[in-house]
Image (cartoon, rainbow, N blue to C red):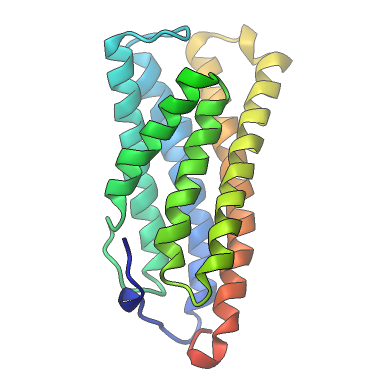
Length: 213
């Protein structure tokens, strides 16, 4: 976990850069990881599936989730590195372990769309504590971050389901997959980045007198 001592404050225009990069990188991470790679890795090689997955399908879904987490962590940390000193893969182990667990917990207990909702909720919980340790007031960041990602999961899942019943269900297999996951990922990313951006801005502005710009 990131320790407060690792945070290095950089004055000037870095707050604006962090916020812009935070939004852009997270949108890119969701597009690359879920809208593009997930349908290809999880469904192209092993085919469509019902609730019960075969072993190859389970393996490829986990490969897809791992790829998404690597992309997300790298791009997220790249944004944070404009304001803090931390490694590009910092926290990756938490994401690789906990996010797939949350995804499959949602899938095999409550089924779709709770796999998506639980996945984003897990990302939010991890970020709540990892990034919270860098901020001046971690407690409000923690609960607001978790809520932001939960709302993102709900919004993304709702958008995907609405599109499915509005006509995507009649599209071809990969067309349907790419359409669904594009809508889910972009909607979720726009939801949580718009919320967390404001929260980060508030946190950084509170310590303007301590060289936060």
